[in-house]
Length: 286
Length: 286
Image (cartoon, helix red, strand yellow):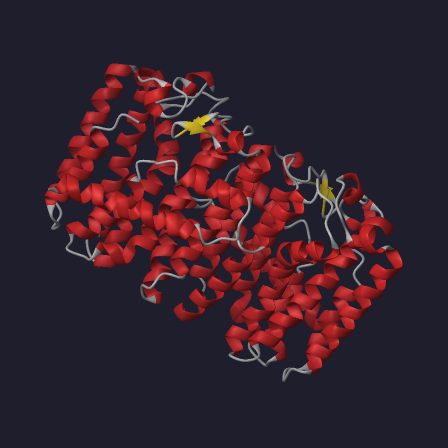
């Protein structure tokens, strides 16, 4: 029953993204925006928001706009991170990266367009003004120069410098954690409770997610991942696997998943829905 | 007296930008954001908002956050437009462009950071929520995938295709016009009147501004412009000068400035302040 709920949510997110991305004026940038967003990601971040709302008994469909805005921000960050000047990746979500399919200029503008339109989607949503402001404040703080963008800067810096475990955790707190914690904390704002606990869960989940990413980079293949396997080593990146080894990384991820479970049991929401979310992450292969 | 007002406004804008840009977490991206914003532009767009508010007798200082957000968006667009994959410019505001001073990755992130933080600045401003939403809606519609970003796409497309005069006007309506009309129209939202007339004035002014740009590109030098003179010809761009010739371009710009004057006389605000604004644009050398 609950698997059906999540599948349904993802379908609703995808349909709504399709509608939102048909709105801009026609041209290469619009095509590139659609290409990258509709490539079929896991939709983890919007599902986190909608599932948490559902777990507190809230009508989650009212927040589809906001959920899609989060996915648009996530996708813009992937497009820009994949650029030749950044990680220089050719493969993403099982397809050529945006700048490979189109060109660099179009990919830069498509990323800019997605970030910009994410703001428009929230501002033009039908929720109340005070909620638009509170949710956008948290979201753009999480994705901004003291959040995800800062994390990307640190990630690049440590390509040429050896990172300690503490520094690595700091990179990922910002680069991955902020935009995984944000949707959960945003649900807390909407329901008006447990915002801090949801945020804590989000950062535990974000870190576990990132360690999984590092593990998958060395244990999986490009076809399964939908992006180039082994690219961390190629880019000389410090990862949990390079610092802790594969076995200890797995132990650490499992420890964090257990922590997430404890976090969930401490909340007043429907635990089943939240545990399903957690399992979706634990079982992921890409 | 009025020149003093505008000078004072620019100083207030610069001081406030300095405060806002010191907020993000330290690092190369923050330095690059500051470097590009504090390079000393004309601050035309924020001055348009504040002057129009003043012309309607509104306490303009309350909107300094919003004004600075517009300048941050303008600067992000310059940073990304200057990138090697776009216009590949080395000089901007009399200094090396952002990617020349730092590196491409940092410049991409600095642009992303400015766009993102522009949203945060408005969301965290002290104006009322309904105004934040209305002003941000208009601003990010103007800068987005159906506004300025669309214009940049069209501009690039016509580097390899001959544009007609009508197509050129369309490019500049979006690429330059939208972000010059937006601050005037935003003033109309705040004061609750003449929004449409302010928008019309904005697009007339924006087009005149762009024709001036095309003229300056061939008649001025890099030292005066603060950016590379003659770059339009080098990039194979269609311009008003290449389509109409220098003399007819000057006539067209003058015609538009006269139209702006008529627009202003049709409004109920303090005409003197608005005419000063117009003169600031007419007399510009960069």
